[in-house]
Length: 129
Image 1 (cartoon, helix red, strand yellow):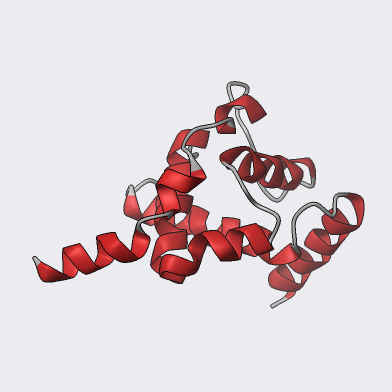
Image 2 (tube, helix red, strand yellow):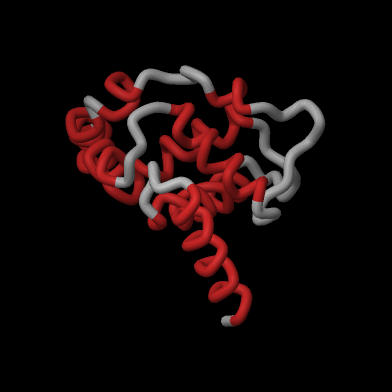
């Protein structure tokens, strides 16, 4: 319980310093990280692209056709926003990076319109197979 409390305290501190992203977005990124590590069967470090595709899949799994709306509500409108969130957490030692990791790894990895626009249609098509 103390670990969670500390996480939320640090997120509040980040939010006071950088209010572009709502605090919920930080918890979401942590959950998406764990989701992606499990999906890739990889408990070690993920690179930016691995994390971003995992975030996309997790957002769709959690919020379905509302995924983009939820992310936009949190201040996220592109993949670079996730990079900013990750690097804010790196700055507070919630996450770590390797010497090869950079914010550029998160720049325009996928287009939000393409990634989230056909979620409902795609899930209906998959359901009919």
